[in-house]
Length: 264
Image 1 (spheres, rainbow, N blue to C red):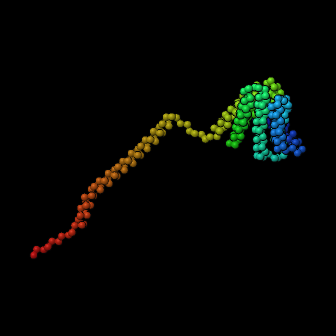
Image 2: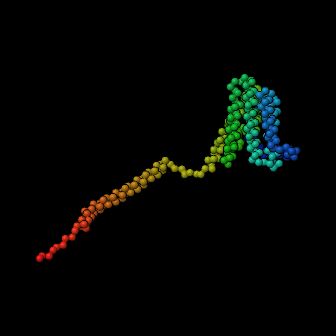
Image 3: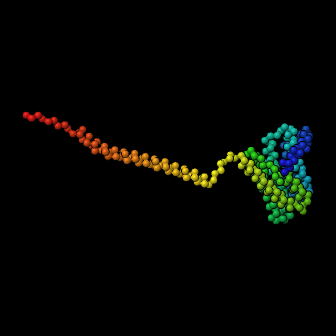
């Protein structure tokens, strides 16, 4: 939601900071790598139950993820390699955060609720995959109720107020699932719009077309059969008629000539 509605406003605020960081020798790859380190620290703090510390570390992780793009633009080093590195790091970060939450719930003896972070991780991966696959096909699948920035903000609220962490996780699961459904519908409709228009035919028209095709094929077969039969009959009759005549001709050719003798 933030990425679609307030992206231009956020870029206007982050570009000066990215330029300042780039001038002081900070690169986008450094921010991405250090963001992964802060995400690991966040997961460890969460697993050990230090949720307030985990909230500050989560905010630090979000800052790294927020400024790596503007730093790359300021340095003119935006590339496919950097985008790939950032995307892979984001997926690892999601796994670390949900793993830390699951460990915390196990330590709190929450029973089957430890599966809740795993469900959130699964749906989150689906949302990311939908966007990556749609962009690979030349379509757009951005937007939704619960993108990466919204997930981190809501999870940070759960760290700040531990008594609402379980409801926050349920809200994360529900809203992320709605985001996945919305992206699927969006890409599905966009893909249908790119398909060529097919003529709509009724059932009666289809049946009539099949009847005409069968009738033409049957008529052709009958004509070919009749033509072949008459030709066969004509050949057989000709051979029967020419048979005795040919045998007589052969006998006449092989019969010796008899010369009449003159009377004496």
